Length: 571
Image (cartoon, rainbow, N blue to C red; front, side):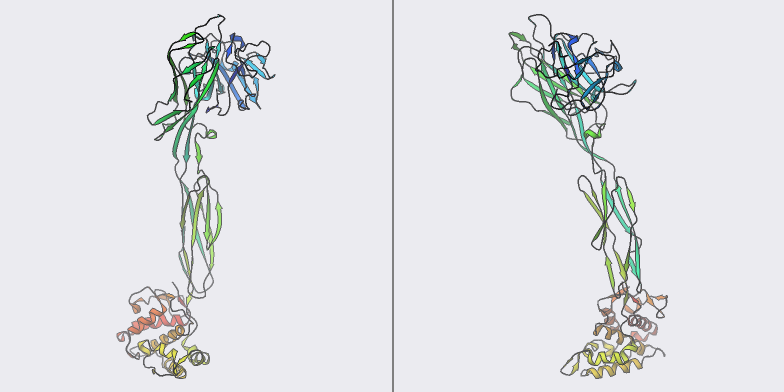
């Protein structure tokens, strides 16, 4: 019989003869016979000479069965013709490297290729009127254990009557069944970080991440039962079949038999028909299930005698989820590879086959000015189907805003030189002065001011800075002017956001104040927008600011002071 069994997929089971008596009536010089003159002529072969399809290494036992009904190789079963004579331990054997070794009490023999064989006798006569028997070979179940028919393979043989004329014998149907299905595991990955925003004045910042790869519950699919249906003709003439079919006994399963248009089984021969049963919906629970094959033939002449129309059946048991080595189940996505990509560089964290959590960390240098964003993505990629899931956690590391031009800088020699020589003029008018005049507080600067005039204006404003009195216009004007010069001369990027909720006061302290009230309640704002907003709260020339509310003026002053001293925090 062609191989297709969950018990020994890819291997053949055969009966044969000893080499000295020519007892095989359909032999072809190979150890594969199914027509004998006498019960004592039947031996078991390891089939090692048939296309390399001998039994796999392991322990087995055999039993001779009545072909009627469902096969049951266990001792005491109604169809077991061997067990009335001895128990299954007497029929134990081992196969190693294709060589069969008798471990029971049955007689040994030598096959046609000098290979060891084991005699099937003793076994009772079959009640089958055609003299048909079934040889079952099963995996060794252990001492005092019973086996399941799905752990066996079967081969039919026939003891030929001595009469010269025999009535035609009905063809015998045997089969095997192998269950397979896919068991896939879904994976997911999640990632988090202990802190998403770092704001500090220099140094480095370390972020600590948590990455969890989670293995989900198994998802089963693609349930299939397949095997081979063997139809054996023990007659001296061919038998034509009408149909070979298969039924798994489940409305969710559709079975298809691979068969030619004309079904003729030659005399004293066996034809094999592969079949496949596919489930359209999830398969049954992994309990033992029976698959039945049927061969049908019409009334016909066989070697000059009438064979009545009839059908024959053969059954095989199968079970889902019993042998992962035979794709039952075929496990996919059992493991995954977890990687982590940070700023374009990828690191492999591990290859888990169960849910696992990783705790990587990363240290970033704090920018000299502004912020840096660090995208960090964890990815899991499964082994078999290359499915992916990813999750990201971004970290922003922010340094200071400003720090290039205090009030003292802009009135000293270096700052004055920047104003007088570092900027261009248009028709004699200093461009930096034109820029400053876009803000209301500085529109007391002449529209025709030269760069030397601008420098003198700056010196005058800074020297007049004072926080005393009922208002703080003079100090606020001087601090805002310094910040405006920082932007005009590109010492501070105007598009950098400042955190208005964390402003050092006093400067270089660890104390913070919230200056949002001076900027319309905003929690963050670019430096350029801060200048524009503060200017909108002033009259022309900056003598009346924020409704002359000194507390609000002070908040705005503190914000610009922090920028000028480089202690304002970016966000």
